[in-house]
Length: 477
Image (cartoon, rainbow, N blue to C red):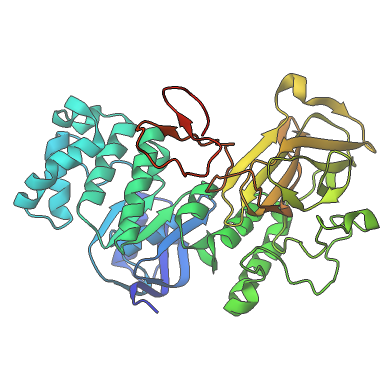
């Protein structure tokens, strides 16, 4: 096992809130008098982060994520507990933190890089690369107080990653930049990962956490609720943020219980994403029962074990499944064939502005494709209680061989606001079988048709390809 570069043991952080400014002085003079309200931002955090790990940190606003990062980088001291960090730490915390607004971008590069441990000569050697990565043009010579938030992030990220940190901490900063810059940032993060660096990454973007991170933790109310794989943590996080307030304590207890299980017990999914059911039906509503389903293209044991269902608000999604165009239920699909993803929705309350959606994801949780009936013309204006609506999404399977997961959701107006009436995450799964016609790699089949053109008449024409043509005549060899 790799050595830990970050170790937190029983770390807690308490902030004192005073009703009046003078109460702080009174408490200093008379320590026995307690005039402050105590707010515990962190409570008994125990965390070991190995070298080379990319840790995603998720949680609702106010859960303690930023406080945790500030304690790790050393800008805050814990009220109790111990923190041990090994190596050079570079952090992107609050927007513009560590920058002097009166200094120019160039001056801030030198100032900030020196704080991170570089000498002047090293900074001069790296400056052109930093400026090129930030790509803010002549603004590099202007005071940073004139910068937009995007320019701030560009320069701060360029400096933070140019010092070759052992540990890089990123707190929501990448959500500010444009798409092209975000892609450049993720490429830089991947290079740090490949070089053995450790990354702490805070984001509300589930896809970014799942695709970038090797592990993740869920924070809530200053407590580390769960440490697990990114997919498991994200699924519990999404369930937590959409849970009814009176259901949150029970849900948090269920999430805590995952930490008490062994790693083997927690990993209920095999590498192919299948659940070990031993033939037991897990949900009567989500599993088909009639014999039409049990043919060569349907595996009754192919059941997601990590399904997350949001609290129902007047509707319930029933029996999500994939069928052929003739109506036969399947979960083994053939590439480039047409299928229908369908589910029924029972409405228990009357509602308006009803919309339906679906999503296809990889085993890791990366969102590949989806559809949503949005807008005035695609939504159902009004649905009476007691109504059942069958939803169908026809699609061509342009995915390469592998296992994929499906979401289903229905949105409607509740007290004037659009919200999920019901949503099921990882409610169904399917496997794509190889297609002999495809030569594609990766995840998506783009229907690529290769063509080889002879540009030298001396080339060996024994190439066995229907696509090989002579450039001069255009004839197929």
